[in-house]
Length: 211
Image 1 (cartoon, helix red, strand yellow):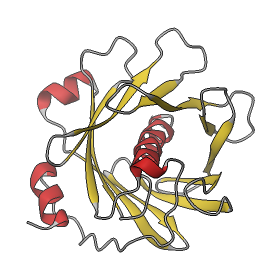
Image 2: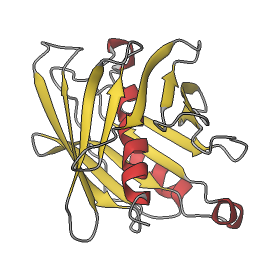
Image 3: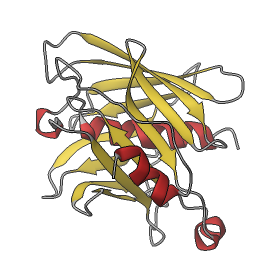
Image 4: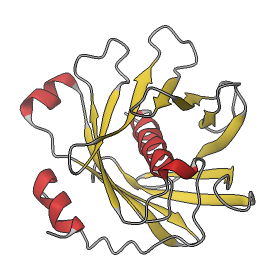
């Protein structure tokens, strides 16, 4: 079963073919999360989360890839990302006092690794992500995200090429009652899987701000 068939089966909708070729040279924040083949992340928002911002993140084979935990008492609405061994990777938080809606990815010391800025877009959400390529030459990288939550899909582009594709699962009754979501994020080979997960959750945050 191809990636598009797999995601179509679990989401209940048929998606356009996901021909995500390898990103060369690799780009991202963490070299340990660069994979040689496409990866489908199954990102389920926890129904038992006290903070309301916890996600379990597995691959399509059910293997744990990442942990995302919200800090319930944090005024910065911060979410921590850790590997399966519970090692801290980075955090995602909303920037206060910004002209445009902005989220930041930070390391453990609070240093900015990536800035995500929401742009005005008719009919959907759009944001720009900027960071230095820590898995390559360290040069600046700009990504563009476009899509809308109502349609349940978004693309993340690098140099006008899709490197990450996001699809939201059609809600079942229990999810609808609890306001929880499940996302299926397809990541191109050579693109940081942990960064793709953070970009997915950032898109979710930007979209829900419009509700």
